[in-house]
Image 1 (cartoon, one colour):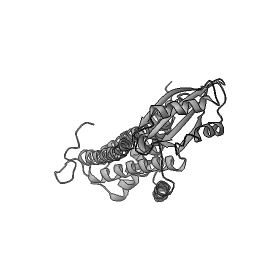
Image 2 (image 1 turned 135 degrees about the vertical axis):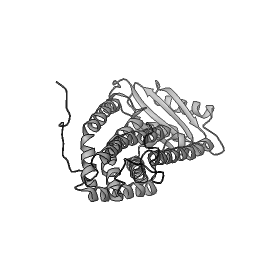
Image 3 (image 1 turned 30 degrees about the vertical axis):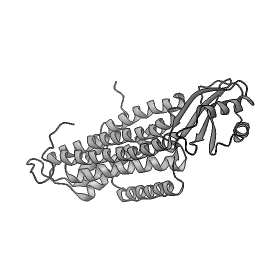
Image 4 (image 1 turned 90 degrees about the horizontal axis):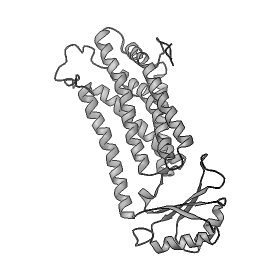
Length: 322
C-alpha cells in the first residue's frame, strides 16, 4: 500500500476567498513593515559590531549576578541571556554575553575579555569561556549592505528567470510571492526580537529558492493545462492545476517541516534562529505559492494559446529546462 497524505483527486476551490487572502497578506505586510520601522531588528554581533562570549558553568545562571559583576568594567551596552536547550543536562548552564563595540575599537580587546572573565569568575568560580566572537563596526556595516544586495539580486534573478520561462504575468505573481515571504519573515523576527544575523540572511535566500521551486511546479502544471484546456475558465484551470500538484506540495512541505521541527527541538541554540526562519519560510512559502502567486496570475490573466509561442510574449524560452 502507498501512503497518501491527500486524496488522489481533490476539488478544493483555492480562489473562493482569493480577495480575502490578498487583504490578509497586505495587512500582514503593513504590520511587518511597521514593526521593522518602530521596533526594529535585534541585530546580532554580525551586524552591530562587538563581541559575543558563550559561557558554561555547573552553577545555575543568575543574570543579575552576571550583570552586576560586569557593570563595574564600564563596557556600555552589555546583553546577557541564558541559553535553554532540552539537550543540556542540569550540570550544563550556558549563557551568552554580548558586549557592544567600544568607541575607537574594532572589537573588545583581549585584555578586556580577560577582565570580563575575571569578573565573572569572582562570582562563578567554575565558569568557562567556550567561545569568543568579535566583529568590528565597519565590517558589520558592510555586512548589512551586502546582505540587502544579496536578497534583492536573488529576487531580481527570479523575476528574469520566470519571465523568460513563462510570461510576465507569471513573473509578477512569483516575485510578489517572494517579496511577501521575505517581508513577513523579517517582520516575525522584529516582533519577537529574535536575533538577526548572517545565518538568517542565509535562511532568507534559502526561503526564496524554496518558495520559487514550489511556485514553478504549480506554474508548470498551469502551462500544461493551458495547452490542454483552451476553453476552460482561468479560475477553474488554476484550481485544477493546484489540486493536481497538491499531493506533491503537501509531501514536500510536510517532510521538510518534520526535519526542521526535529532541528528546532534537538539542534541546539546555535542554529535555532536559522531553523526557525526556515520553518516559518516553508509555511508562508507554501501559502504564497497558491494564494499570492496564483491569485495575482488569475487577476492579471494569461495568454491562452501556448501552441504557437511568439517572440513578443516573453515566453520564447519557455522550453528551457529548470
